[in-house]
Length: 147
Image (tube, rainbow, N blue to C red):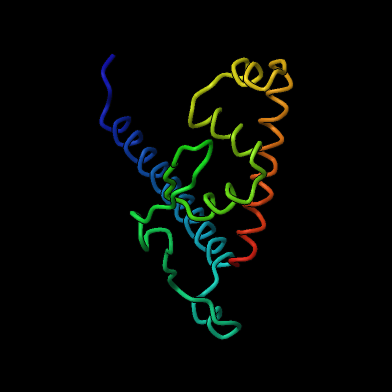
């Protein structure tokens, strides 16, 4: 089947019309997206007029990253790099400190900790869990005192 020149011209005009329509609606969508973005954006000038918001912050995490806080637990000297954790550990009762030391630093299992204290494994887990809760509460108190 041979295509005549008129048929080729018709296909070309149809394709051009299709392209114009696609480009027209793409432009409309772009304008809508731009307007939506503008409605959600807030200028920096508006922020500085209402309240002063600093445009930068400074981290206090890395003031002295090599500072060490020694804590003595079970006759062993443990060196920590977090001062709040060292202070919170020091404020715990001796038994709770020992349990934390044995479980996390001494790598004792719950069964072994239970045997050391003459208890079963589940009781040892209860003591570990309660020590962690006390440590968490102490850390919260210290954190709120700093703020």
